[in-house]
Length: 245
Image 1 (cartoon, rainbow, N blue to C red):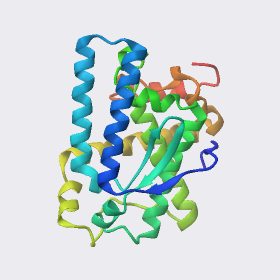
Image 2 (cartoon, rainbow, N blue to C red; image 1 turned 60 degrees about the vertical axis):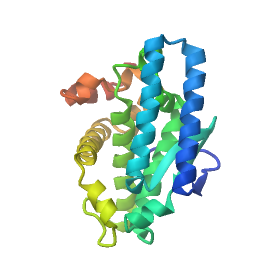
Image 3 (tube, one colour; image 1 turned 90 degrees about the vertical axis):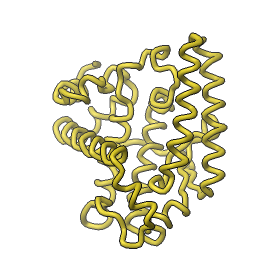
Image 4 (spheres, one colour; image 1 turned 45 degrees about the vertical axis):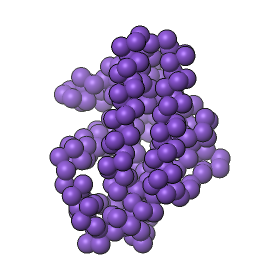
């Protein structure tokens, strides 16, 4: 559906939430150390990055029930998909086969993004020092999540006859999950993902996959934050240009 290669092999594993949180913490600290040595940020930038690390851990510790699957790079050069059965259970989706297809389709699209860019788009999205990498004005999250949400709709429509929706919580969901499901922070993120997926769909429909997929190797085609906050037509036109951006 994406026209992109996957890792060989595609690694999918399950983890407990506790182990997942510990691996995220170790991975973030390792990434921070590597980037600090590589990019030589200022003291102010280092303090901001450390604060971001703490905020990320707090966010994951709170919202893990809504994060049943994730693409991660816990080991350098080894992208993998992690499933959290505890989160699936909390969401009432542990035995929901269409939902599992959607989750895997979504996360394997992130794996394809990694492969198509040689890992560059993951580095750009997760960097603690975007200004040092020259990516501060680029909205990688809009691109990567919009593309993955577009793809999982294509995949589940092909498998089940229509896209799998998770707009409503499962009747089996826990009270904790239902509270998180309606939190403003999550609702804002969901609306942003919908907008991004619609924009990717429009671009692919207008210009085709081959042209759109140039975005993975041409950083100048990545949307600007000023575009994703307002003028999406400017990005669509740039992403769809047959010439180098």
